Image (tube, rainbow, N blue to C red; front, top):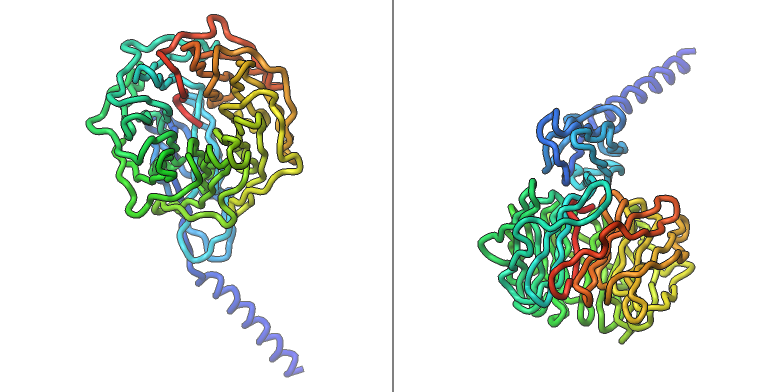
Length: 453
């Protein structure tokens, strides 16, 4: 009997020790970055985040956030949106929102908020300007912003990007080896040039802004390099040593919605360079196996698109008139051809875009067809099924989707215009809006929507 009591005491002591150890385990905080929130103050925003269905955090502005409670090492965490913003109405999505606590604070949660697009910006390559348009929130139709077009101050703008908060616009100027920076008037959409442009490598062709709004990456097509910058109030500072060798003639850059991976389309060798992104420094590390073959040498890989779940990447191959489909490796970013790795488009695809719902892909097809084609995306495999193409203007070179998935916009280089379409939510079919196409400047080469997704 005494032995049994002694064993029982030992067992109880062990349980207490285990409990005590759990209570004494190191604890860490969970936080990240908010972008795209338009309202200000509690009444103007209304966004509430939650971690582990317990700790609520009212978000009143863009920038960094940290939950008040801490979580023990070894425990899991899940960040969700408890209440979406209501004034104005926005949709906020969480990325990198779950995991297991190791031995560091969590700081890479990204919450991206979007609403119906307000403004559209078009880079006019041959007249060195940016056309700015107000978007009708009901119809998607475009109206010129007062003062448009705006001079870039450089030569041959070929790409544009709006930062996730809709405050700055960046215009890549291929002929003057720089990126022009503009502030965006929140009420009118008008552009005002900031003091100095950003110096780049030779013949910059594309730019991508990280979802946390702290880093920018520029592809330099003549240098076969990618340059990384830190961002602060529209000022870009090159990251020391962050000039990365990519494939031959890089012409497009995309970052996945979680901000973990960056991909570069290399035109001349038909490959995709892939990197992991350091959330803290913005530095890049090449992913094992990179670059990955898309169109192949000489087949002109020109554009990339990533679905919002970070599951699939699509690459447009101009010369072979094909789209390559890849699965994105979970936790690695590795590109693996899907079970249906190549789809013939019948016409050379110049630009790709995936809708926010991740169920449709759109391809701007140049050559004789001059069309934009919708494709259904199979959620389980990433396979594409072609819908009915619709006519665009001449030489469509850039396609984007409104952040809420309501409208599709196509820049027509040859006919100096922008085509606008409403989207059928059921099948992705496109219908031209009244008044489309809308006149732009000369040689419209790229288009961006504010706010961006």
